[in-house]
Amino acid sequence: MPTAPFKDPVFVSRPLLPSLDTLVPALSEIWEAKWLTNMGAKHIQLEQELKRELNASNISLFNNGTIALLAAIKSLSLSGEVITTPFTFAATPHSLTWQNIKPIFCDIDAETLTIDPKKIESLITGKTTGILGVHVYGNPCDVHAIDLIAKKYNLKVIYDAAHAFGTEINGQGIANFGDITMFSFHATKLFHSAEGGCLATKDQNLKYTIDLLKNFGIKNEEEVVSVGINGKLSEPHSAIGLLVLDLIASERSKRSRIKNKYKECLNDVPGISIFETKGTSKDSFQYLVAIVDEDRFGRSRNAVFEELRRHNVIARKYFFPLCSNFPIYKDFPSAHPTNLPVANLKSEQVLALPFYGELSLDSVEKICEIIKGTR
Ligand code: T4K
Image 1 (cartoon, helix red, strand yellow):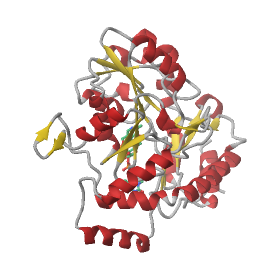
Image 2 (cartoon, rainbow, N blue to C red; image 1 turned 90 degrees about the horizontal axis):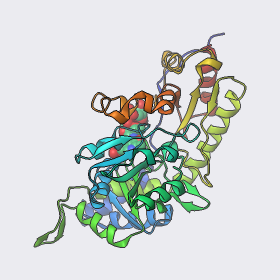
Image 3 (spheres, rainbow, N blue to C red; image 1 turned 45 degrees about the vertical axis):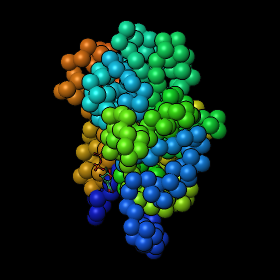
């Protein structure tokens, strides 16, 4: 019997919401202090708590991940060309282009879907100043191989860890690799503050530069020392972050159960696999991504996507279209599909399925039935 559509849309993600009973007292404290932004008490507390949570030496909060990435690039004085991955959200290459830096697209590894270190060196020119890797779906880049290349060519390394909150490699927080790591705290992320983000760095002096940049370059009331921006996270956003932080341990275990259910239900379906992180001692549980191999499954990723939509399941093709195929980038020599065969193939195969703690296991079973019914 065909599976009936869901009555209400089932989205790819839903934000983790603290109860209003906990939010109202937190907002009352802000009202009482009449201090709404500019590094207030909640902001200071959230930076401290995130340092512990992410196992990081220094944290600078931002009003979103994209502004944080812009500030990271600026703080390292990157210029010319930066080697990055096309298999990411638009914010990654845009943050370079926004600062007149040319993103040079490097193909990805077929297993990890992160930038392929074996292909980085051939893209390095006299203009290259850095590498911008993305820990896509919380899966870490090959940080050790990238570190060796960066040292050899004297390049800076930034990691976009928008999907990697809580990811650890051999017990070490993902914030401890490269020069700077960016996290996004957008509503769709495991940990969020409605909008928000942060930069982590081991270098205390760099944190100082970053903190100036996020506040217009203001050193004190009478000195403005750099071309900064307004990247500050407000007190209400910080308060939401503090409350959400208390909820993520239980959210992770719920997501772990949901992931197991997806795996159990799709286990015997030829041509459909669930993406697994490699080399992590702790996972972020940010996205649940199915890979559809059309030859073995018999139908394309797009067919599965459409079938799910017909049943009110709003899966997302993260990341299609590939950034290198955007009209603004497609004519770059590095963007030519012949240079990026793996990224182009994977972008046609991936499908992010609904994944959030409140999703019932019955709904997961039903979503899997719909996927199987596509054949
Ligand atoms: N680097 C990477 C690798 C990234 O993935 C991102 C962001 C960034 C950098 C930049 O970080 P931020 O500047 O955003 O901090 C979403 C998010 O807006 C974006 O943060 C995220 N990556 C990207 C992968 O996904 P959209 O355009 O897909 O969002 P939208 O509005 O379609 O939302 C997706 C689903 O989430 C909706 O179908 C329903 C649900 N949803 C969404 C919102 C906003 C809710 O249930 N409640 C909500 O409030 O970009």
